[in-house]
Length: 99
Image (tube, rainbow, N blue to C red; front, side, top):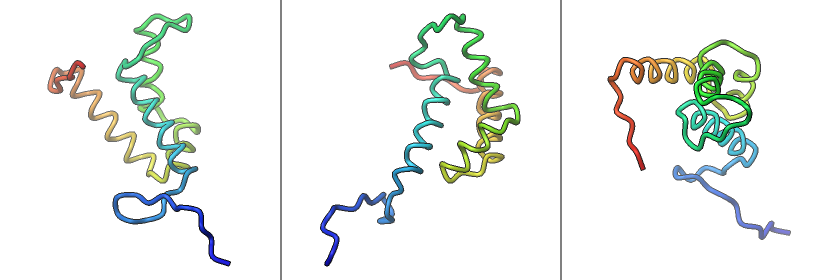
């Protein structure tokens, strides 16, 4: 019997993996934390929270590697891109948009 449930497709027409999508969203939220979007004080100052979130991207750690792997990304590439962006932002070469 044919499966009648709809299948999620991405832009390229490939089947979407809900587990991979979940881990990609974990990366998105972590990046938003590193950029200071939606900051809420959880007993930390904004500076400590922001620094901690950025270190998660820039310093080698097993959790970051696992999340990238589960999301289907190369952790070294994601780390390099994030580090370069943070460096450019610190040097004033990136203008952040405000919403």
